[in-house]
View 1 (cartoon, rainbow, N blue to C red):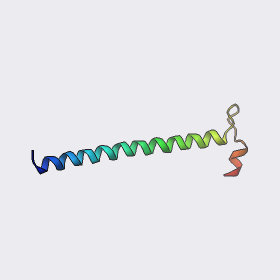
View 2: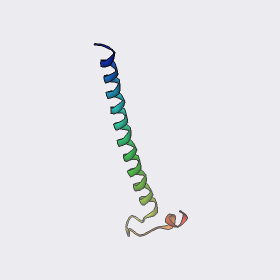
View 3: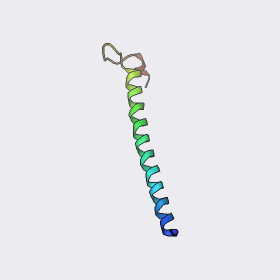
View 4: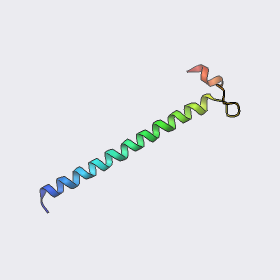
Length: 55
């Protein structure tokens, strides 16, 4: 096992970390949108509530 093996393993690790970070950021964005919707929409009527007017 030489230097090129180490570089290949390092590249794979960096790629895995990038993919996990990308998916985590997508999930955070989705959850932020869901939180904003829930904060600005009445649960029972699905109409905009008072919080929606302060945006």
